Length: 323
Ligand SMILES: Nc1nc2c(c(=O)[nH]1)N[C@H]1C(S)=C(S)[C@@H](COP(=O)(O)O)O[C@H]1N2
Ligand SMILES: [Mo]
Image (cartoon, rainbow, N blue to C red):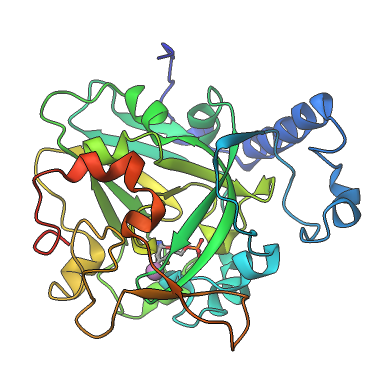
């Protein structure tokens, strides 16, 4: 673990300019190291990788072959055009249409609860020490669809460890921004805003748990949860909190948004499990986005195919009761 000096944010320090330089800095360092094939200059990206529309800034990252499913990745358009992000509307196309109103710079992250280091920190200081990697993960929504996504991020465990959670820290809670002007969906009482997610601390510390800042080699588009979202590929998509502003270490299991809204339908664990159906539909199969209307549904795998890495976390737990 790195020993980091993490200066807290003073309100007067939060300026748009600072974040502008951060973006520029990332871009410049990326270009500095560019091996042309891995990191096309932004202007040329469209020709180098037809899937990637020009737009968000390119990131500097290393592919991690250990975590790279071999199924064909979904296209940039599918990944950024078919989203669940109720803060911007309920239809899958709403986030892409409406998330432009979210300002992701400046951004700060508050660390709270059962840890030695707490406070509010500049996103820049949060990200600086973490080398970025690309991991191609399966993504399975509780609604029965799935995608394959080349995320760019870093292990969540590396971030959490910097704040030195204490022995009472049994869970980690993630809270999304609350701002009905930037997030117009919050003007309707669809959920009890802000959106809250949570994990057991050993789940959060599992090497698969990824703090995501980009997709397809570029900064995350707003509709995918910019500037900071988690992804746990063995869990249903709703466990991946987006646009996170607070991480809190707790002794008790946090009350998270979906179990709070509908306790009979959504559990805290939300591990992908073909044997445990949602009360209103089966979870045995899934529809791969982009596969075409007539493509057969695929069988869903236990823990979304990541059982080898995560089954040990749940030994002794009745997955039918703790769903
Ligand atoms: N704040 C917030 N986070 C959220 C959601 C949401 O509505 N609000 N939806 C969740 C659900 S149900 C899914 S499937 C994933 C979708 O992530 P993606 O759009 O990047 O695929 O985000 C999750 N995180
Ligand atoms: Mo979902």
